[in-house]
Figure (tube, one colour):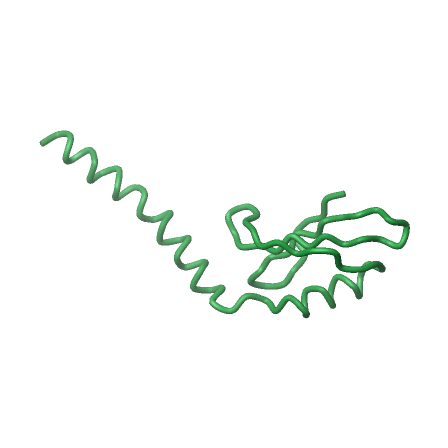
Length: 91
């Protein structure tokens, strides 16, 4: 019986995190359109789009956009998939 109660307690403790993730996904029912994301990056940074991959950044949905600068260097912009805001840059 104690084991059962411990399992129920653990499942109850895990529920709020699952609920928060579900609420975040619901808030992002319509991700930012990729053409708008690429346009925003292009307005800020000269260069060209190479590739985009969906992923997760800090627990939220994100686009990882590879961008080639005029000097040939490649950077990766991390964009919040829900808001379309750039949240990071690598490279």
